[in-house]
Image (cartoon, rainbow, N blue to C red; front, top):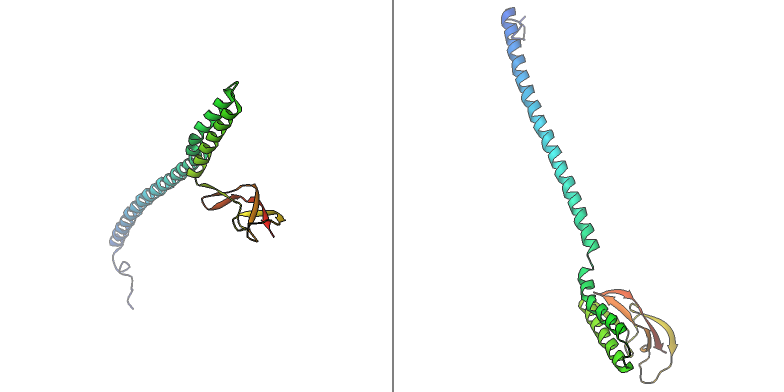
Length: 173
């Protein structure tokens, strides 16, 4: 009967050398794989750190965007504030001059609001729209179509297509 193990047929010295040779080969492979494993661990740690830094950077940018989102709008409102302060500082002015100043300030404020995407809704004569108007009363009125707006108690506003506040209106029966 033949022994299938080729090392068993060899003399003990040859067997020891073959085992030692294979052991050295396996030791080299093991050390190569340990080096590769160390490199991969280092790469993973670097990637994790990079992702963490990126997440923190995005969080910081988002916080900055939230804090300064209204910067342009507020910068546009500064002339309106200046005009209101000038109007309050004027003493002994006649009422018509004060009224003209308030009207100019209101026009400036409306210009700023419109340039920021704000639009007023709810005008007399418009058809009633429950998406944009809130009916406060039903009235009879001449010259206005049934279901139309007879009076506006408070303007409504839409910002870039999204309703901010519905208009409070009286609707014709």
